[in-house]
Length: 182
Image 1 (cartoon, one colour):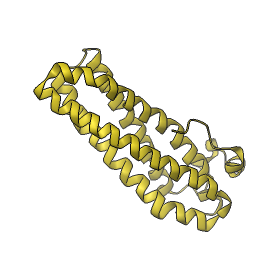
Image 2 (cartoon, helix red, strand yellow):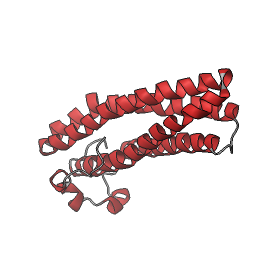
Image 3 (tube, rainbow, N blue to C red):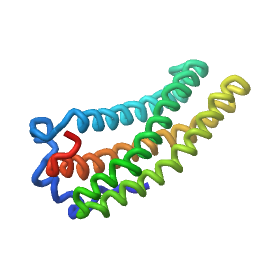
Image 4 (spheres, rainbow, N blue to C red):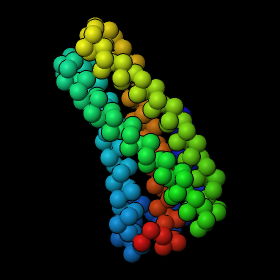
C-alpha cells in the first residue's frame, strides 16, 4: 500500500487553498464538510478496531466483549468504506475530472489506493469473522489469531492516515476553486 504523499504537481491548488483556510472559505459548503466528516469517522473506526484488538491481546478486555465490539465496529468500518470509495470512484471523481483534468493522475492514484484498500478490507473481514467465531469455539485459538488481525487493523489505520489526507489535499482545493458541491 502506498505510503508516500501525493507528488507536489498533484497538489498545486493546495498552495492557493491551504488547509487552514478551508473552514473560512465562502465555497466551503456543508457537503464538503460532510464528506470530510465521513473521513473523520473512518479514522475513528479504524482506531477503534485496532485499539479493541490490542486491548483483547493485552487481556484488558474479555473475549466476548472484544468479539462484540469487533463485529460491530469492524462491520461499520468495512461497509462504510466500501460504499464511500465506491461512490467516489464512480460519481465524485469523474465530476472532479470533468471540472479540472489537470488532476486526473492524482485521482487515478486515489482510485488505485481504493483497489488496494479493498484487498486489505477483504483480508480484515475474513480474519475478523474467524476471530469472532473462534471466540465461541476455541478462545485460545481466537487469541492466537488476533495477532494477525491486529497487524491488518494497524495496516488499515496507517493507510487511512495517508490516503485521507492526500484525498482531502487534492479534492478540497478543486472544489473550492471551481465552486463545486455548494
